[in-house]
Amino acid sequence: MSSPALGTARRNDRAVLVIAVLLFSSLCAALMQSLVIPIQSELPQLLNTSVSNASWVVTATLLGGGVAMPLVGRLADLVGKKPVLVVAATILVVGSLVCALSDTLSIVLVGRVLQGIAMGYIPVAISMVREVAPPQMVNGAVAGVSATLGVGGALGLPLAAWIAQDHDWHALFWVSTVLAVAMTLLSLAFLPNTHDRHPGRIDFVGAIGLAIGLVGVLVGVSKGNDWGWGEASTIGMIGGGVVVLLLWGWFEKRHDDPLVDLGTMSKRPVLLTNIAGVLIGFGMMAQSIVVPQLLELPKAAGGLGQTILQAGLWMAPGGLMMMLFSPVSAKLLTRLGGRITLATGAFVLAGGYVVAVFMTNAPWQLLIASCIVCAGVGIGYAAMPTLILSNVPAAEAASSVSVNTLMRSIGTTVAGAVMAVVLTSQTFVLAPGTPEIPTHGAFRLCFVIGAAAAAAGALVVLMIPRRGRTPEAPVADAPDAARDELVAAAVTE
Image (cartoon, rainbow, N blue to C red; front, side, top):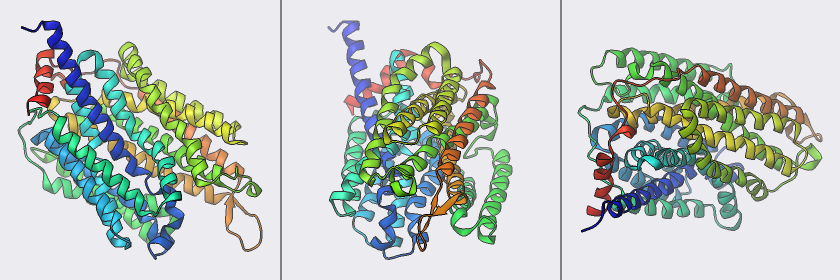
């Protein structure tokens, strides 16, 4: 007869295995964000299309993720997390294969949308890990899985640059196919069937309305610099999207089983955390856009003259910094709580940009600034889901984390648009007949804006009440016996 201590050790081992699968799979899904960035300038030739059309290869994944995340989260709350995670991983396999087998823009866009939809895996994984992790591992596990959203994007740059430099561009998608197959099989074999379904039904009208509104706003914002901010197409997309989202909110407030419970989302801790998510997401993406451009700009133009691969390698330590700060985030969460931890991360993020303003003359200087920025992102991204899950009912855990992840994505989209405006508003011509190049001052202004956004995020976080819980205890506060029952399924199925 096994001792209680041995039984607890075995349950903890099973929980660690489940957490490892969720970490690996979330990282694979997050890699899709930056998969094609190293070959973005070559896409018009590779796909035989215009520069404007080729940019949709990046935008499509953003749209797919933005539209899918709230729906995926709601499905996970209704039918259980494991089935949704397995389906999301399978969608990533299909999307990767579609891209790997095609040379046509329209087909590649379909694959990239599917890859974006699969990013819905990450918020559901965050909500699951909080259920299955033993109490002493909860903060560290949530921090690790949540940080993959930033880590994947950062590590994806050098990985994709290396693959694209030495192989045919299709190899990028063959690698993502292999990773997607691995995450599908691991999710199917080792994730527990948590039996966490909650009564309800899918609000299809709400899902369609949200999709239309988000697509309108995100497309308008992401393409505004290309189309022109004063053009009817840009104003129509953004304005029309906002109108649809307002109508969607009116409809959801009156729906008896909404896709997103706006009552929960409007509670002060949740609302302010989501606003901070937009600002911190903005801060993360600003350095991901600006630093590589400054690194790759020719020395004659005031840049640092690095190749795509070299720029990716200079950026890679930032992704590793996010990983290294996951345990630090966990300790801060345990000692200080989610509110102070998130504010700390935002202030560190702002500090990294302040350093960047004064250190732009060598790659190693940008490396230091990027590592500070990424440390702040790692701390902040770890704290956000903890704040959300501590203030929502268990029946809305996955959907609420998905909305928060969507807010981060909106922040990254806005950052891309703002940085593009800044970098194209202050330019000079190196030689007659050559393209306009951003001035060094434009890059520094981008860093100032990033610092301001992050600092604003910190101030928003400090407005969150020190204590605020819903009457219904969050999943993470479930007794150990319930958590043990969940992870036991990982070896009995």
